[in-house]
Figure 1 (cartoon, rainbow, N blue to C red):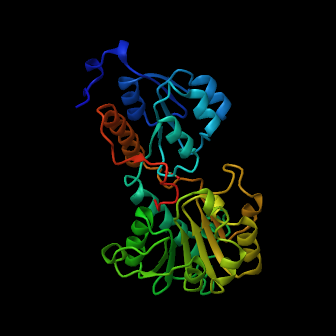
Figure 2: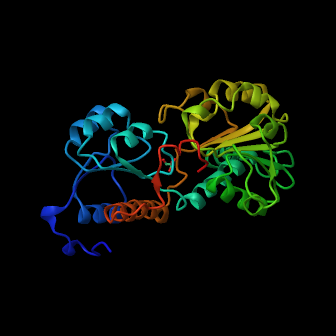
Length: 339
Ligand code: DGY
């Protein structure tokens, strides 16, 4: 078992770690107790070159989805670097193949954030379907003339088909909540789930077929190079007219041009987006739509969840150092697994 308190560690022999972003206070304290930590105090985004400079000689690199951990950076930090620990379930920002080639372990944070992400997924869906942005603006801006029978009519969730693209842990947590709202669940994955995980959801072997059967579509597939632009103009055209689209996964899975054209034409009634291509510099056209609910990548942003993510990485590191293979160790072939 690893020591429980700071005093139990021999500070002379602690491994060196670099922390690329500021973490919740308890997580930072625990990291400082277990490693000789240097951290990015300013929390400004660091380029791979800046990380290479700051993290020279460390054996542990704590990153998040905002850092690009490419092959060149890993080669620069090898052989000292032994573990990359990312405070995210997604790992599309890390060159896993090079990590494997260099013998660098990569840890991530599955499971502990599924409920938090599913909550935000429902927030996106409800705000898009029930016109949350316009409603808030009307009241806040002093523009509310009072109740009216035709005011801000949206689309209800009850009885609608929710198509979930990516029925991994997060997708299934969304399905559980959506069922409670009276929705019928359809999904597309690379392969069909066993019946106990499907829980009555209807499988579609292609994304196109899922789109045809989705009154509302939730993107919950993991970020991966092969999924870039997967929800393209043809898929969006296959949605029933008046569909709602939400994205809790990675922005680059959706073609911005295609979604924006469909919002302009009215083919898509509304969208709810928590993630964007090229964050934080999202396509500025999204800001012009009243029927797009925008959220700044806060899927896992609860105190409990971010702490749990931090602990999962620290526990994983302790397990690795004991010679074990923790469940949150990513293998190089994991790239397209649903999250
Ligand atoms: C994740 O965990 O992948 C979230 O998107 C935060 O990066």
